[in-house]
Amino acid sequence: MGIQVVSGAMLQCSFGLAPSTLSVLPANMVNATAPAATIMDNIPGMNVPPFGMCQSMANPTVAAATAAALGVLTPMPCMPVLPAPWTPGSPTVLIKGKPALTDKSMCTCAYGGMIKINVPGQTKMQVK
Picture 1 (cartoon, one colour):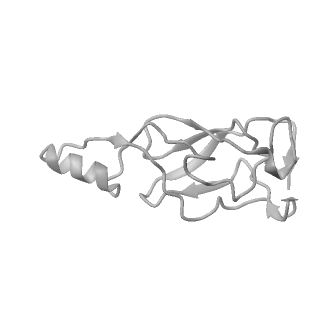
Picture 2 (cartoon, rainbow, N blue to C red):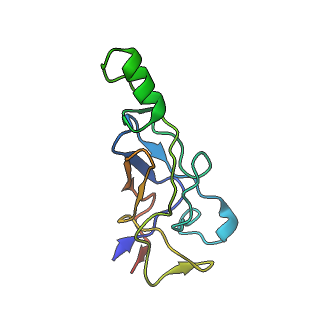
């Protein structure tokens, strides 16, 4: 059983230098103290803001800056690239036909970072 994730949840990327806050639009019309998230709330900039600076060498801007600094890792501004939805979602709770997002869900950035949910935004609503 996991905890339902809502707008305002705190996120962290394994290659990011700062946490970020999940933003969920009220389009799903489901609230669990705040707009409830689904696995499809993975749009960079809209749902998932940047994580400060990126340290992934798979990020072309980091690789270029590191090469220019003669191999010294040089973090560059983060802009997540999320090609797939959050996984796993709730297998039993659907919001507008999409699995609900739980605190156990993770998302992978195309640059290799694993984005996880540190704080789900609320603790009262649990989903199976």
